[in-house]
Image (cartoon, one colour):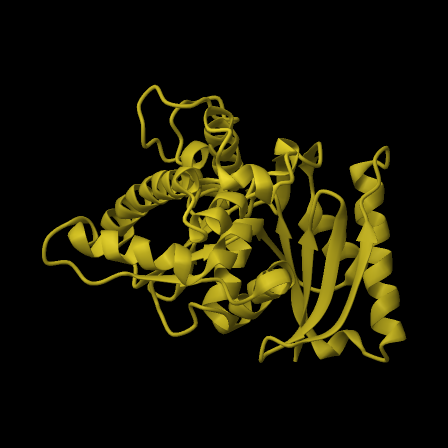
Length: 321
């Protein structure tokens, strides 16, 4: 059987037909154009999926359902996107519109929660029952997997670990609060800290790395220059890893996971990122003395995380029936 995975992004929607082994057998996409109403986008999406099913020579009976990963505040009880700031969507009945147009069961989740389920079913977490996912991007997305099931919380809006406050009165967060985990551990925070350090030290190798253009600094700049022995870069990386580690300690204490999975562009540093975090976690007894070891893993789904995570919603629904 196949599931349809729909990964909604700010500029495009990626769709794939996924089998039970987590293989994408057919993939396609559509643009999210500015000025097009949210209702029209849903209509076009449904029409596109129907056309692709026909073009692929498949029948609706070949599919168990549709899973949708969408950024923003997603109410899994009503199937609606209550609010997605990046898309400027409000009170959009995604499940209702797609199930009506496609004629298959539809399940929706916040995109980070969907990614967590995808990693648990097909990725780095498939051998574990208790997991926390952190996506280190513009913010810090999160997902929680407890006793072999995705934890979604009230209205499916739980798992927002990026908005755990780790410094009272700290940096201003886009959510309106101060000191949130993502203001210190996101790629955006790392980039801001890198630029600040570069401005203080004009002799840093990071200036050569970006060819003198500070606007091209990205999440890899400090890491790559730290590998070259640049002291300023090393300090930036150590500071970033400190905040990331202490945030993870909180999640270790709350959820006592088997592993924490890191996703997003920064996770591309792999062992250079995970090894010092694991070492520090061991020193901190994984949050409390005499508690189990927590593995720090890197996402395995890569660019297909969104589609596979969304499809996992449909597969999980069938498994739990």
